[in-house]
Structure formats: structure tokens, C-alpha cells
Length: 145
Image (cartoon, rainbow, N blue to C red; front, top):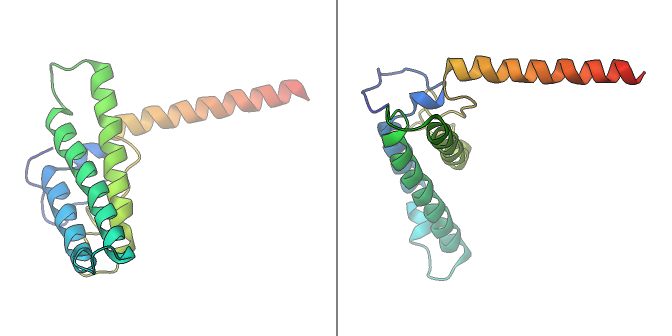
């Protein structure tokens, strides 16, 4: 999670997010909002930049904290699951804040992506749960006909 990532590797799952990813997207957003943050005191432009930066700071802190413990062998399953949901949620919110700049040359389209699952096993498990729920709904629909 904090190991160096090969250049050009794609972020697919939550477990692929690194502290380096967080630092880079944080710096990218700080640069994009720097001019607005220096706008006239009290202006809407400055307030929007301050609001974005406050949310950004909160999300970055959540990610930095969560990533340090997300694979802890001493943590319970429930605690790890909660951390992993928190990491995905914070990452996706940070990604959503940066996504309007996807065409910017400094935007890392390989790494800065929305993530749905923690890892491949989580994806298979959740897809199976969805399929099972769909099958139950279909069975219920047939019974009610």
C-alpha cells in the first residue's frame, strides 16, 4: 500500500491506493485552487477555494490515517472492513474533486480513478451478492404472477 508503484500502473482497487497517490492528488488540487484561494478576501471565489481546501484536507487526513492501518494483521475483520470502506469513500470523494481537470496535462488518469472494490476477491464477492439478490427478486416476481 505504501510501496513504490511502477510508472504507468493503473489503479483498479482500493488496495492499490498509496500514500504517494494521496500526496500527488493533494498537490494537484492545491495547485488548481491556489489562484482562487488568493482572491479578494470575502469574495465567493475565495470562499469556494477555502471550502474545497477544507474538504480536501479532511479527505487527505482520512486517507493517510486509514492507509497506515488498512492491512494491519492485528485488526479485527470488522475494523478492517470499516477502514477499507472509509478509504474507498475518501478516495472517491477526492477523485470527484479532481475529475473536472481530467484533460489537464498533470492529471494522472492511470492512477486517479474511481474505485468500487477493495480488491479482486471483494469484487467477486460483491458481484455474487448482487447476482443472488437479483435471482431472489426474479423468483419473487415469478411467484407473484
